[in-house]
Length: 328
Image (cartoon, rainbow, N blue to C red):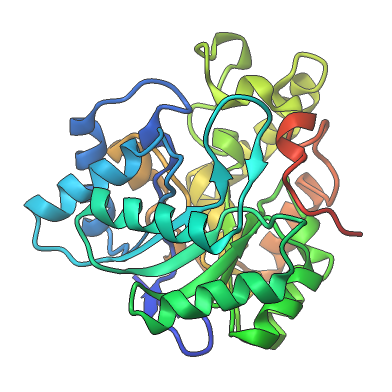
């Protein structure tokens, strides 16, 4: 697989990373054996960057990765995240040095490693200046616990302020053919600063997968039950557009997921999408996306099928959106 660099001074990793969110059961039940098989398939496909977080299954995803690392000789680049304060009540973001350090130590222990390549602030807490957050991360770099740090779901101004203190290795925001806000300055800023941009949910929560999810049949607890784009008043409109894109991908000889990822990779050499899945078979359906080269005619046709702003409904409900930095 092609490689891309994690930031101006970071290591080279596979052009496609792998997101481990679904190992925690947020998109339906799974087993450890299925997760291990999917990790094996990702490695066999040439993927060397694996992305997780302390809250994915409340430690389940990191524990699975730890089991995988302990039973295989593979040594991938691992990225993890912290910032959500656990407990009852409304979601609270904690960027204090004490919280981030303690959560990182827990992550390292679950995965059985002494450091990770990349450690993200999963969200930016408004009461913590970006400069202070960068200082906390810089100390973790100096101690050898992380190679670099990242920011997630942030606005360009936060990246600029943090980067001025200590270089940001990567920014991870949602970006796909149905979520285009990062085009309004964030992707461009990352390119100027030499920061990797890591699109999460690049397959639109499965909407570019095969088969597409049926919102009416989603199991209880599935995250998509909370996402307005899958709601009954919005999904039929989104489905019509998605079906046209799926048909076009098949006409080109690609899976819809592979074509959606190829479109992302085509947006800039500093983009490293992190699609995720619970299934090795689903992974194989998009693992070859980095080998697809789009023509001008194909770019134009995709823009016709899925123009900017085509999706009906917001990408988050009000509760989830409350922790995201808004801009533009």
